[in-house]
Amino acid sequence: AQSVAQPEDQVNVAEGNPLTVKCTYSVSGNPYLFWYVQYPNRGLQFLLKYITGDNLVKGSYGFEAEFNKSQTSFHLKKPSALVSDSALYFCAVSSDTGRRALTFGSGTRLQVQP
Amino acid sequence: GAGVSQSPRYKVTKRGQDVALRCDPISGHVSLYWYRQALGQGPEFLTYFNYEAQQDKSGLPNDRFSAERPEGSISTLTIQRTEQRDSAMYRCASSSGQKPGNTDTQYFGPGTRLTVL
Image 1 (cartoon, rainbow over the protein chains, first blue to last red):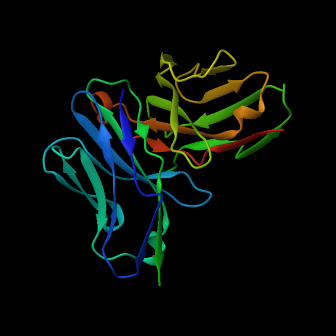
Image 2 (image 1 turned 60 degrees about the vertical axis):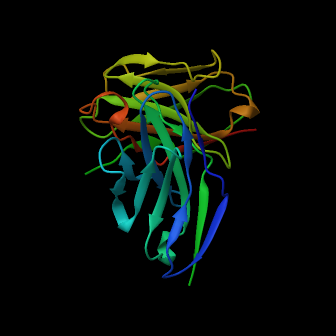
């Protein structure tokens, strides 16, 4: 069985400071990793994904994530946070051996203070 | 272009009633997924279609839940004899089917908030 852990329910950061939202995973086979963001009353929006290749993945809105195989992590980062980044962030995993579905973490609420 | 759409956005029903939730995927997307999201949790997989074929329904919680996609486009998730524990956000996603295996990006709709009284 595959699983995702997002150890922080909420992350608080000041505008302009770097942000990190943590994600660790467990899968059989090679992992495929995704980050989604959820704004109030809207659907999940795709941010970025890691499939293979370069461990540093760049995505929408200036976000990036680093795949670390030895630590089974895929933390989401941004060099300078904006108030508009405040939202609920979900990490998800699938694999090359699992079923055709994403397994999501429980989400991390990011609060960026002005 | 148009994204994934779902209707209704909100549904309130009484226990014991049947409900049908609709998903209209991105045009041309061959793969369609249904997820259920409880409050404070991430989405959980229910079922998956490739074109009109239901490839995986292992996530459906019991036989009150069913889904169809008869023409390979719009899909309907039906819950019979609803119970209060069925209250949740039901999310639909679609993917192009052009990438191999599980590497395809899933694009989600806004969801249907179901409340069973």
